[in-house]
Image (cartoon, rainbow, N blue to C red; front, side):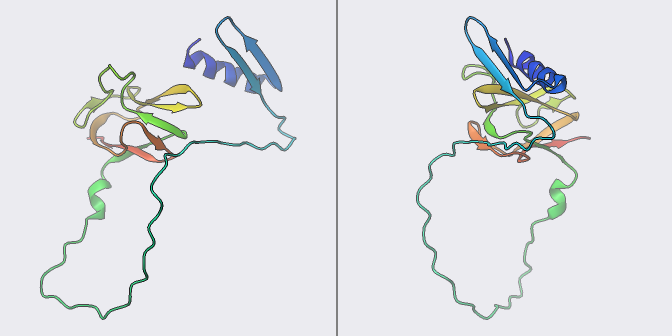
Length: 162
């Protein structure tokens, strides 16, 4: 059973109004539990975050008088990315740019994509979810490193729609 069949099964169970469905096959078991709309339920999301070094203590800095300089200051242009469309993560999980370690990446910077093209895979709870493009254009920038954890609504790619 592939991921699309599982997703369709979950949608079917949610629409049917059943509160619990168990499916057992030779090589796997699936249990889907739902709550009634009138009953209050809680949803818990668990995500393992990579271990980082302990945060370093930063001493408070004293406030100094501003320095006056004759040289013009270069300010980053906020409008640089405004012409691009940002593709965001629809789920929490681990971001992968390849379908398998020995396969090529789905897209590279400069790749031309169409609506419905697979851009990456996000693994959530041992399920690999293909993230498809909702726009056509050209990949300008990949904003996340391969095998990195991503949050819901985190920007993944910048796409130039022109």
